[in-house]
Structure formats: structure tokens, C-alpha cells
Image (tube, rainbow, N blue to C red):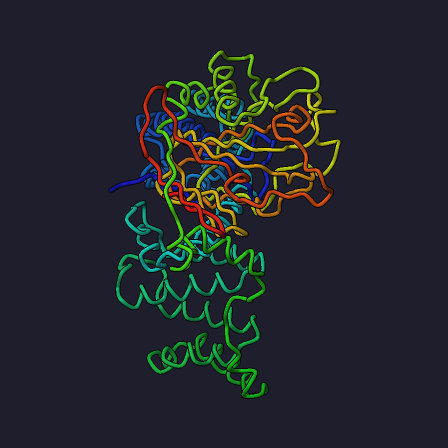
Length: 512
């Protein structure tokens, strides 16, 4: 099955960016990038045809550029590096500006204005970071990955030059482990003859890997890698110079230093480890699973019509806010939340019971680190909610289907809610005494395949004084998890069925 596979991180620093030209940060902007590239390609073709008619030379680079495989990773690399090279060739400072060149340069200006800017090196760096993050989270096979396959999904393969480029980017950020793992995987594939047309041979790559190990202060490993190559190529002076240098360095180090294990630093705490493991699947033990039971739920809280209304607005790219009054569908949805939760949900200009609907688009690799929803500073409160208290509860809607990844996980509860289009989840953020319920710490898993659209509706506490009264004591807390983490819904009007299995246990619940 052929899938448009994008290796981009939504939230490079794990937060929403508001700069429009952060093209890596959502699938919506990357789609615009791909669509506008077609205009540049058409203009470049017109230029080449005009040059050929005039029997003028056309740079081989320009011909080859138009044959580049359409792939999402290469999309950003083309915009950041390859297109710039095209511009330098076609619209050089000393070149005469004829009709086709003017047309090409004009198209470039129109595209840049339409996009609101041009992709930057930081976008490409973020895309590379996403590749490593996705690999570390989901632990897919690197050998298959280089050939364009991850699990059951396929995409355009990477060239050896691509892998070396990615590895160099990792080293620039002191991520030596990922850099060497990718290079060693490429070396295995080269030795198997999997890249017959590659300009990179196994000896050259072995030297690159050996140099990387040496920079990691492991010259003994460098010697081990080059030993076989040195025997096979006795006349390669550069290879033997490297080999002799690494042997000298290795001899000056102790035996223990030369056999230092090379692995990822194990600095993760239990919560982070549970977060990553939950993204891969359930963490419940057989004993916990034995105590689960079913609760009734309903299909499609959001109908397809409502999802289209929210998700197709042009102004929604990375994040946007919609007031209930902007659309009658939103007002009806807010009323439905009130009927289901029993809480006051009326949106008002002052002392509002709820915030506006937040709409988010996660690109592939998009994620949120573990966090709680209550706001820590009064300055973060929107104007209409000042004086309304903190976020007592959260309603989260899934607006799109994601083929792999993107689940919402609760590490402290060992609980995950996979993405199911049209479904919603509800939970209380505050204890009965007003303190933050740390069990509700949650995170968004990276999106491996697909585009994740989410909407959040936060309910404020002051309007709930008669709906969810405070406890009678300062230490009052909600003991029953079912009352804290109320439900997961997939509602459709007038239709009732058990579409989802909602399972509760002492330590949390799972939704399958």
C-alpha cells in the first residue's frame, strides 16, 4: 500500500509555533508547499523548453531536478537547498533576463508571497529530528526504513547520500548514537549490494563511521571497522593513513576505554519510559487486564458534516480558536457536552464557563510532551475566562483518522486512547479540593503516518459550583477513578451501540 509518508516533526521544540513560515510544523502547510511547488516546476519546464528552442545549453542539474521523486522528506530538502541552486543557475546576477527567465522569477515571487515566506534550514533540521524521534519512539526496522518501508506502510526510499546527510545532521546536534546507527545500517545494506547505483562505496562509508567513532573517543572501534577494508585494499593510502592513526590512538588508551559500550544514555525517568512504551501499546499487566470490564459508549459524537466544517477552514493551519457563536454547529456541540457531562458549558464574553474551541493540526512526527491542562499563570488566561477559575475539565475531540501513532496517553494511569475519527474523551483536571489531579498528566504520541486534527474544549471551574461542588475538607479528593476520568464517547444522534470498549481498572483504563 502506497502512502504519502512525511518525516516531519510538528512542534520541533515540542510546542506550537505561531510563525507561519514554520513549514515543518503541520501537514496543512506542507500540503500547501507541495501544491505550490507544482507552479515552480511548470515555470522551470517552460524555461527549459524555451532554452532548447533557442538551441541554448541547459544545465544537466535542471533536467535532473525535474525527475526527483516526489517524497515528503525530499520536499523540504528541495525547497531549502535544490530550488535555491536552480534560482542561482537561472536567475544569476550576470545573466541576461529574457522572457522565460522573467516568467520563472515572477512565479517564484508569487509562490513565496502566497506561502508567506520560504522554507528555512531550521525546517529541514526539524524534519531530520523528526526521523530520529519517530525511530526512537516506534523502533521500526532501520534496514527496511532505508528502502521506504515502515511496518506495513511504504514510501519513497532514501539514497545513501540522504542517509549520510541525515547522519551528519544528527552529529551536528551531538546525537552521535543515532548518527552511527544510521550509518552502520547503510553500511550493511551496501555490503549486501542493495544500492548498486550508489556513488558511495562501503570503504568510503567505513571511513566515515570510523571517524565518527573516533570523535566519540572510541578509536578501538574505529580500528575494528577499518581492519577488513585495510586488508582488502592495500594500495589505498588514505584508508591506511586513517587505519594507522586510529591504531596509534587506540594503543594509547586503556583496554577498558577501548571497549566502552556504545549505546543511548539511559537518563529517562519511569514516567518518560511509560510514556514512550504506551505510545507503542498497552502497559497493563495480566492481573490488571483481568479486572477490566465494559462500559457502554456511542458511535460518532462528531458527525462527518461537523468535522468537515471545523477541519476545512482556510484559517486553520497549526492552531486556531473558534468561538461557539461563529457556527451554529459549535453551539449545538457545546450543548451536547453540557447534557453528557452535566456541567455548565455556556460561552460568554465575561466570566465564561468554557474557553473557545481550540483546533490543532499535527504533522507527521507531531507530539506533545507529558503535561497537565490547568494553567499555571493568570496571564495565560484568555480575557473572557479571567475570574472563571482554572480548567476543571477537558473535552478532546479527534477530527481525523491517523493510520499509525498519535494516541493520547496517560503515563501515571498506564492508559492510552488511540485516534478514532469522530470520538471524544473527557476528564477532570482538578481534585475536589481544587488541586491539580496529577493522574491526569497526559501526552500526545508522535504521528507516524497521517495527519492528526484535534479539537479541545476546556471547561472552567467557577460555573460548576453546584454541578461539581468542592469537597468539605481541604484534603478532599475523588477516590473513584471512574468519576474523575469520566468517559470516552463516540456519539451519533439516535444511535446507540458499543462501538468502543471502555475498560476501567484500579490503575486506569484502556480504550481499544
